[in-house]
Length: 449
Image (cartoon, rainbow, N blue to C red; front, side, top):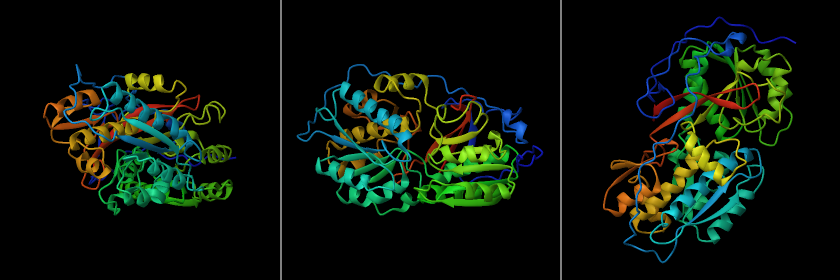
């Protein structure tokens, strides 16, 4: 068995990005950019990534709430929010943090007196994945129970199967994790929103990051769906703009269980690095690659497969592998709150985005003085920009009830929406796997879209 070829570390030729990506340290405000000196453990494989410069610790900038004034308007129809998040299927590992984020948001809203004088109700349903019709059945059930907004789905492919059903019913669809660029131009009647940035940003960050690590050639194993192919396109564009070359790209379909052919074809091209753009299929693909001599430091992963593999692989299997997840690092105080909701949490991916989705829907309902889906959608952009900054429901709703305009910034980072319902600016976190096959924050990149 042989390893992939060694390459001399080099400083990659990075082009100026139209997204305006800038390297930042972990703190969301004003921290200096991380030093690019030094190298991580990836040097053993001929790839020298910039040294990790962040721990992911710290606390969120929670505002002072005080006593929340009563709403001057009460609603005869309490706000009802559904969730369409994965508890089965290839993205089931993302379900627990997303559901915990939703439940924490609902708890804090109701602890502050609810929306328009009434407690908010939440109804959870499984989204499954694209191999099943679970999402359609769950959506039908949620709409039948009169929800005004649905938080989900996590998978872009799943959302494509239900977006017309949800928005056609006049209900807000608010995804915490959809990243396909296709939704930007979707005919959604102004009812589709998301707190996760388009993969135009994640793709550029990952492509450029592999180049800064010294990779001159990259191979990719890609899930053949809207998420996988869309992200791969943006990774390739950024990597090649930085002077590199994608020498192999192999696709597979949801439901496939054999990946030897894809692995063999990618390794035959002898790339410096390999990007895995998959969901939980990584559990099968990683051992195939490392068994053929691929060093974990040559492996780069994405949000669809960044998970806790401590029970799946032998210690050290992924040590030094890196990957990207949209959103800022979950801060310690936020993690503690999430653990009171679900003490078994191991991953925190998209918990902040889910929490923010609930807060934004609740605040938009307050601003609209209505729990009707179309009225909520009409206020989502307004509560995300241009007013007094706030970052919790109690502080924000207090400002609204005192006649102030608000600018909600959340746990996922700054939240400002375009007319299409996309975040206009966001963080992408870069993480590195440890010897126990769990990952820790390395650094963040901030970009504007």
